[in-house]
Image 1: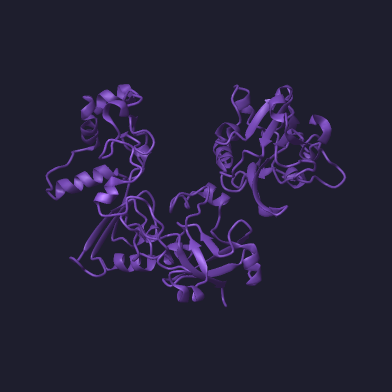
Image 2: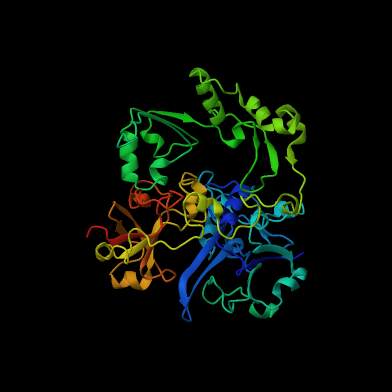
Length: 193
Length: 311
């Protein structure tokens, strides 16, 4: 079942709870940040001051450079569309960390193993939400089957990057917020308009 | 402490207070604390305040103590059980420290241990702490429209649009505007030297007052303090985003990085409080002009000036 991760940009108010929830779930020290809330602004747009928060995380790229470059085949796409890391195969060569255009392949500073967002598939398998989703006090993050998106996408602008969908009523999301490498876009813009 | 009026204070016992950062006019607080013959502090972690104490006692966190919790700020009608799950080092709970001190000093009224105090707290319910372990929490049944029988808890029993309590105490029953003790209107000469209004009310989303700077995950999210200033004003004064600036008030000065921000009025400078050392905005605040009826210090309407570090 194809799952998409929805980020409602209008609801995020920048509390960073998702970041702490992720660190707690994945047991990560300072260093790798598998979800990170970026602050846009405060900036002037058409004479008004705006300040927005954009939660960013691994978008599970449609054509994932991390998967392509991994020499041991330890990055595998599962049936949900999530790129998972098989830790037993990973040698810690970090080629994927270099290949990721978004900087979301993390490196554990102690074990030097690669750490990666897998939408908390161990929790999802138990019928739970990913840690960032269940802890978000603003209800800005959702992980939903692709077939169950109608309520989120109605009357909203949306933009898809891999398995990640940003939605907003305020901002016209017509171009990717994070630019992948030149010439290869995994943005499927028109799919949900 | 500094004046010895109305009587000299020789010793201080401080619980869970980072006074050296959180009180107004830090320089004065430091002098006062250092003037003491004896200063004992109790806290969960080492803070700038505990570092100048003669004795520091480690306090138990909520995971390290049995107790009854009643959150008066959130739900005054409920009490919850809190059971100890860990013991780190020699930590003792605040309650134990106080009671054992009272016992040694022969002060009479004290509880032998936390359980005894919990029994006392629960006594109106007619249950002991041991019984409470079975209950885990207790709520007073919710009763709607209580005012129809008893009225409101005001002197008149009615909703008071003006405060008769404040009026009886000699104050103004309705809130009224008071110009800050220093401002471009009340002290125009001083405002020529210190042209910006300083507010210390802004907060970081990940910290609370002086707490949590020692949590690595949170420090990663919000690594350092920024002095926030209007971008157009800052650029016109030759400032650069992210560079160190000095903020100075008639009381003192502090140093931190600047953030130029279009979301703030040109006449205002904002600094988040609670950071230690030279980033402590309470080096600038005033402790002498207190709010009418309340006695709180002025932390928002202050004058300051900003200049580049090194100029």
